[in-house]
Length: 587
Image (cartoon, rainbow, N blue to C red):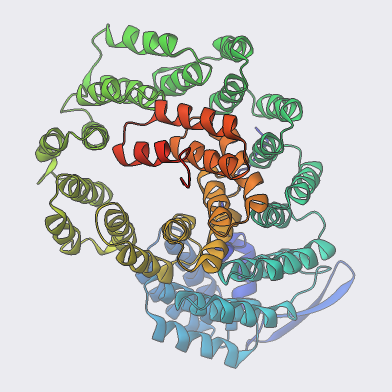
């Protein structure tokens, strides 16, 4: 399948192909004998490459790919013994140190790199140190220097990298207009840059220029028709723009180009079902019956049936397999899929029971207990949630699952009025590799049960480690918006989050809600209505849309959204807020 999916994150880890990178890293400058040769009619100057330096550098890059940065550092140092004047090798050494949070050593390596010669890798590594210190503005300024070191004629790949890096730094610095200008310069020099077009569309969307966002996505698809992620994002954007027929055509094209990908089919079927076209949604599910499905993809098949509005059919598929009394591994996977479709269908009790039925010797047992406990907690069944989590304490879980268990236990404790114990549980964790996850979880806990200012401080700590975290940016922005705190900064952070995660209904809702809190219903409208168009079954989004309509005097529409939202949530706090919307002076 000739498709590729963009990753919605900054481009700090973009790497040249290994062999090319090595030639650049240890053959571009320094004291080795110079060699001149003709390449495409141009006379270029390079150096001979020490085979031993090449060997060590190659090994270092392999270690980097495996996140073995300590080993990579050893190899880069060994390579430098044979090629001590390679500016690029020093720059790569700096990046490895930075991956280990060793800023002084990274700074020293960058200094040596730039002391040999100014190179793209050296300047970019210097900018990464600024980002590591949470100074995106400084990083953007440093990267401006790198622009003079590249050109689109002979170094298109390196030029694209630098411009994208600078644009992302400007987004992190809450300078979206400057990022647009940088991306426009990139596209002027390299009109076919797929990532440039994608990011430009993302920033335009974040700023509310949906027409421009559409134009850039369509340009991208003209360059690469098989860019599946861009096509699906365009379908979502057309939905937001209120152009369902064009969105539908885009989904059809995406499904065709995906060669029958079940996840794409589920998106399309869900779109049709949400538009009130159940027969067409069912036809998509029927069409995919010809696709061969094994037990590993049964979950996707079930999700397709659920998205098409055929939940009984999805459950029948699961129950048919379970009736054969499969082994614990397969039974666990099928029950997890069953629970997921029930949860997505807003049937929490049944979903929890499916998760709870996963056999204890199934590989998915720990995950099933976490998901069941979350559902019980959200329904006010704190003791049941605690009982579900108890068997996992002390188990030999991997680090990621241990972190998830800590978070789950803390949220359950807070939900039953034991906030101090919940705080202590997260504070005493000794899982440094998941510090950001736990810190943001503490922020969520404080926002829901404790001190909202502490929630902001904790999410701020996460952002100091990763200014491109869409999750942390959006969380900070939404909490601040709820309290009408630092609204301009909240808006900037929400826009940055949307630029890094375009098409997210949750983040669109945050942007729109901030505009509402700033008494700008006109600016809020496309974001809130767009979020509801994408996620018409989200109670919180519907509540915000109801506030918008009430503000605009559209009482009937407001009432309709409140009624639907009340059908979707049992949370007493949210229900109280929803019921207050239509009252005089209600929010």
